[in-house]
Amino acid sequence: MGRAVSEPGGGRRAAGASGPGGRGPGPSGPGAGTALASTDRRVGILGGTFDPVHYGHLVIAEEVREALSLDRVLFVPAAVPPHRIGVSITPAEHRAALVELAIAGNPRFAVSRMELERDGPSYTADTLQILANEAARQGVARDLFFILSTEALAGLQGWHDPDRILSLCRLAVVPRPGTPLPSEAELATRFGDRAGRIVEVETVPLAHSASAVRARAGAGLSIRYLVPPAVEAYICDHRLYRSDNPSEDCPK
Ligand code: ATP
Image (cartoon, rainbow, N blue to C red; front, side, top):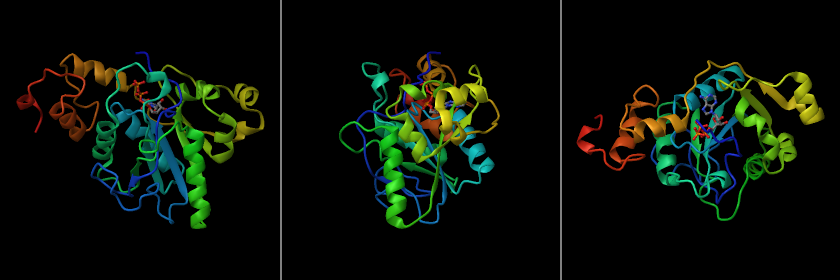
């Protein structure tokens, strides 16, 4: 399926968010910062391209939240990632709107636009630094867990400043069908003392991928049950991934 394993961010990005439980697309949610409340002590961060968001993302976010007793999971859509330059990518506004729709109704989920609105390159390490700085400003002792799959973990050392990433957060690694979790020995070889900051969370394995959703939508095939109904309707209404679908055929 040619899934991307590069760093979720790294393009042009920035600050701004829809607050905890915020719904509507746009930067106007409560708090122009990172969408976190001072009561959010244990926070998961799920970075991704979300082109589009699908049930695979929602399941890992929910199961990690539950397993690690997180107060909040922050979905952070990336700007155009370097590995997708030259590849057609859906405009950030649509991708962020889709995430807003997907998480609506889950008060423990929030979307941050911090990687979409700041000019200049920005990396996961910077995003985590901003979150850590915000916690320090708020005087909050906050534990950050960056959620990523085994597939993404395999490419982590190619990301910008992986050492800083591991100093700023723990990694909550979830299985992705097709990529086994490395053994403890392998993790120790790759990450040394920092290997202890990698937490494995068993989640229900779902083989969903955004590329499969795009391919099916592009071919005029159903994406029902792969994405939430509101996401399916938005994709159809805005003719994402397929320019020739007649909107009268969209699910209401
Ligand atoms: P694409 O198919 O376009 O590469 P994707 O489905 O991998 O996209 P991303 O937005 O790039 O979606 O993923 C964000 C994070 O969620 C990454 O860590 C990715 O590995 C993880 N992820 C996505 N889908 C799944 C899944 N089905 N199971 C476990 N992890 C997943």
